[in-house]
Image (cartoon, rainbow, N blue to C red; front, side, top):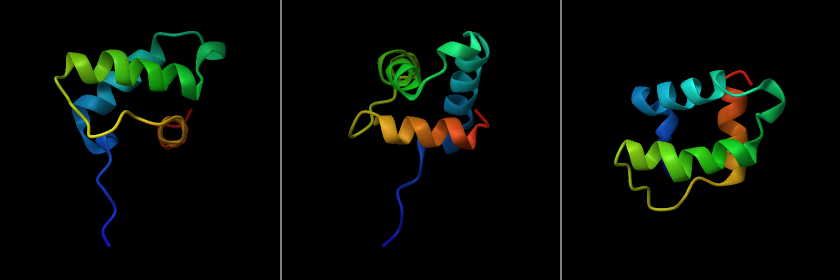
Length: 68
């Protein structure tokens, strides 16, 4: 069984997430905050319609992968 490809592999999504992270105070970076931003803003702005919203667990994994 093949793992699903992460939206984080999309350079446009990755840049949007990093831009958001770089523009909020360090103490405000939480999995919940990034999950909300991705689902409610980034995906909408990029016209991305995922099958399911990004989960908190995935948001946490993305933060780790991005060095946060």
